Amino acid sequence: MRRNRHPQPGFTLIELLLVVLILGVLAAVGSQSLITIARRERANRVTSELASWLEQTNREATQFNAQSAGTSCTITISNGTMVTGAVMATTAPIECSNQSSLRVPDLYGSTNVSITANPTSFVFTPRGTLASSTGSALPNNEVQIIISVDNQPPLRCIRLLGLIGVLELGRNNNVADGNCNVWGRV
Image (cartoon, rainbow, N blue to C red; front, side):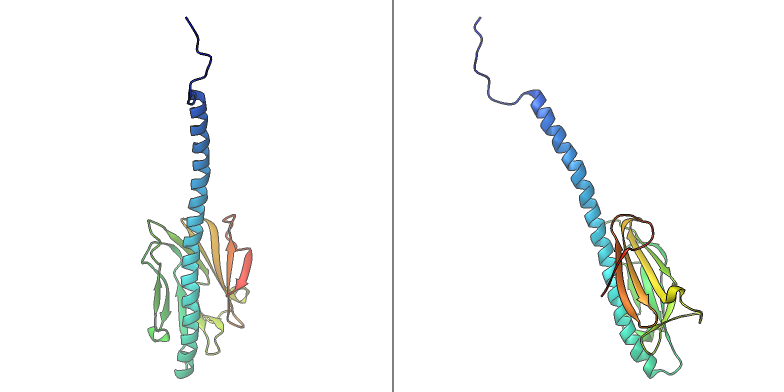
């Protein structure tokens, strides 16, 4: 019997198994990164919508307060876990703003948005600053709203500074310790 000294073209079973194994590991690592990126973009969208609504409501409330003596515009942020279409924030009276309530935007899929506001209700004063709706002092003279998607990091935050009415956006991409560690003005 004569042996063929030239190797046959193609791959061995071991080579194919190694390639499949490497591709599986890369797919597992890559899919987790894609999930994190999608969650970050969803949190950014909710934060952006809420921040824009708060800025618009502050401008409209300042005009409303100037025209109606003794009536203040109260903003209430809904705390808890919400789904698409749930009410995130409202104004009272409804005449304070052209858009008296804000709903969770469609985030494409069964995504839950968690919002924690401290305090949950506050007032835009005639000068465009913030005050407590109960008349007590604001904690740290600010309103802080923390937003997460599916109770997972990354966190996004909105901070309204009481004395001057400045709105800042914050983030924490790594851990969900309940605090944002990077802040910037809008």
